[in-house]
Structure formats: C-alpha cells, structure tokens
View 1 (cartoon, rainbow, N blue to C red):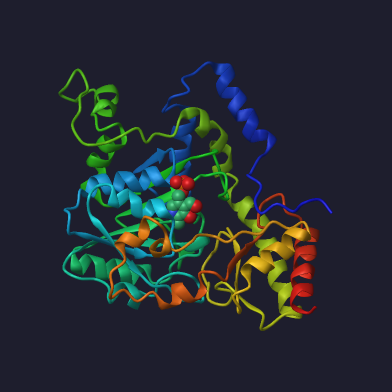
View 2 (tube, rainbow, N blue to C red):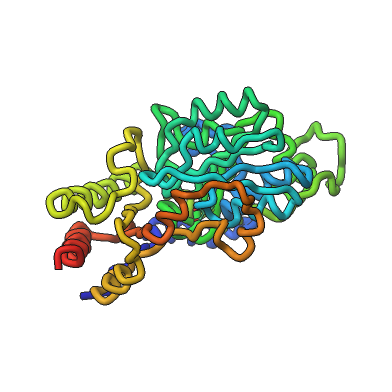
Length: 382
Ligand SMILES: Cc1ncc(COP(=O)(O)O)c(C=O)c1O
C-alpha cells in the first residue's frame, strides 16, 4: 500500500498553465496585475467581499489588523487558546496582551458564553476562529454584542473560505476577516492570504499599512491624490501576495464549488463508514451540528481515551498519515506567559491530546477513505 498523505496541495494543469501565461507575457511578477485584479473581482462576486488585500499569508492579514489597532500595554485581545500561534503573536508583538478562553468539546470552538464571560473593561478585540473551516454559528449575535461593547470583531477564517452561516459567507460578519491560501488549505498559492476589511473606518488605514506603511498605492493609482512622491505615513510592512503566486491561485477561485463538492463526498463517506461500524470510540467533530454550508476542509475526530500517540503510530504503520492539528497556546513555551491564574481552560486541557485529523484532500480517493475507515475500525475492534 502506497502511503496515504494527510494533505496534497491542490494542483491542476490549468493552474500551472496560468503561471506560464504570466511568465510568457513578461508582465510584472510583483503586481497588482491581471490575476490579482481578477481574484478580487471573483471574491466580490462569489462572497460579496468589497474591500480586500491579497496578502502573503493569513498571518500577514492578522498582523495588518494588529498594526491598525495599535493597542496599549494593558489592553486585551480575547481568543481561544486552541488556536494558531500567529493569531496571538500578531497582537503580542505590538505590545498588548492576549487573553485565552475555553472551547466546546464538540466543535473545538468557544461558545458565545465562553467569550462573554471573559470580556472585561480592557477587552478591545475578540478573535473568533472558524476552526478547520467549520463556521461559528452565533456570529450574528456576537457581532451585535461586540457593537454594543465597542469591541472590534475579527474572524480568523484561515481555512474557511466557502463556508457559510445561514446564507451569509464566513468573512462578512467581522470588522475584519483573515483567510489563508497556504498549501494546506482547500485553495492555495504556496503561501498566501486574504484580509477582508468590512469596517469602513479602517479601509484607508488598511491600504497604507498593507503597502509598507506608505501611500504608494494612492500616488500610483489615484490621479487626484495631492502628493507626487510616496512616503512613510503609517507603521506597516511588506504584506503583499506577489502576482506570480496569484497567477497560480486565480483559476482556483473559480473552482471553489468544484473543490468543495469533491471534499464533501469524501467527508460523507467517512461519516457513512463510521456510522455503520463505530459508535462510542471517538466523536466526529461537529458531525451533527453544522447545519450551514461547510467547505469540508477537514475530517477531525476526538478520541475518548488519551491514546493519540499509539493511534497515530498504528495508522503510520498502515501507511496512513494523520495529524494532530494544533497544540494549545497556553501550554506552549511563549504562549504560557499570557495565562492568568483565574483562566479556566478545562475543556481545552481535557481534549487537547485527543484530537486527530484524518487525511482529507482533493487527490484522496473514496477507496482510500474506505481503507482508512477500515483500519480505524480494526484498531478499535481488535
Ligand atoms: C486558525 C488559523 N489561523 C491562522 C493560520 C495561519 O495561516 P498562514 O499559514 O496562512 O499564515 C492558520 C494556519 O493553519 C490557522 O489554522
């Protein structure tokens, strides 16, 4: 049996052909060129994103948010500890504090209550994570809560492009939303990302921070702009997605529904197999609860017992590469510095070593899903 990979980046001849087309045209690899402009158009058409920046990562998009917020030393950003580290470090490096909240064991995301009970006078930002592409389903209520409390809401939607809450795409609720086009995501440019700016007050500032903290964009493209030369006007950095990477991504944006359809068949096959064979050995993350359109980014299970290392080793022996997802931030070398004595992260502590992600990607075959399911069954029924 050939090794079954956990992930294979989305690759298709037509994506490579589009890169060749750009190279043959000898157009600028820096951009923004035809590909970046087309991606923005398509994102607007498909998801209604009005003001966006294509960045070199989701991390870069979050760093732009943090630079725009410019919080003070004792001001806080609330987020789950079960999270990607740069979501926290983007803020920490600007000098403010992060506060961790707990998660629900069924879907690995905080409940509305988890957020509410950790808000205090210092809370300036809440970052909600659409974990593994699953949409947080109380976004509308959270948005109203944040508005009332004058808190900025950021959706970290790294793997969630194409997921919805009710009929609204993920990324249209928060003041900002960040997405990833890292090669582990459904659609990819090697590395890459997207910042959606929904809060009108920040549109201009985001343009400046995005472009190395300069007003170059206006000097180059706005004939009515009052300056002839660009200069340093905000604290920013080099966050741009190069046109070269965008040329690989551009045709994928039109394939989003096709990509999701393929993954949904794999996901449903896992569910069907496990429904017949297994009922009490693990829980399938959010199996019953996600009632809105999901982009089928991941298939995640939560083991009942703390036997993850043994389970992963067994899968590896059977040519299956599975993965653990993240470690909790409050247990990491740097992240533990932001843990308060009173923080209650009971659920996170309990399940953090039991989370396993099974292979899920657009080169995976249904027959391989059947093989993986059979091996998982054998493990528990041996
Ligand atoms: C929730 C979350 N946020 C942020 C990131 C960082 O994305 P990138 O690698 O594009 O910076 C990831 C990456 O997997 C993630 O899962």
